[in-house]
Length: 65
Image (cartoon, rainbow, N blue to C red; front, side, top):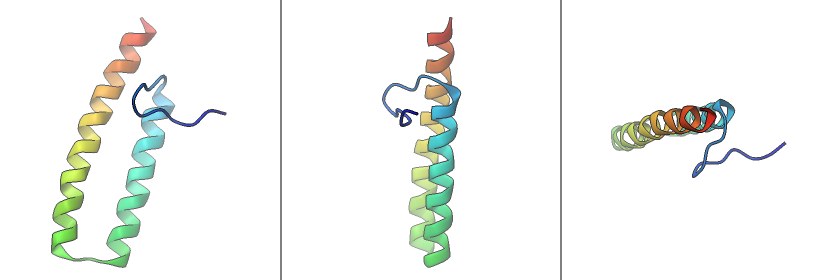
């Protein structure tokens, strides 16, 4: 089994793995500290991750055709 690729996602599983890792990371950070500043930073990182997921989904669909 190969590791998920962030720069060149090859399947939907790459996108799902990255999103699951981010959700686990965000949950862990918010459990440790519930600080308002940390929440704002996680929102910014979350927006970046969502934009990457959209790009990755289009990249995977483009490669499959």
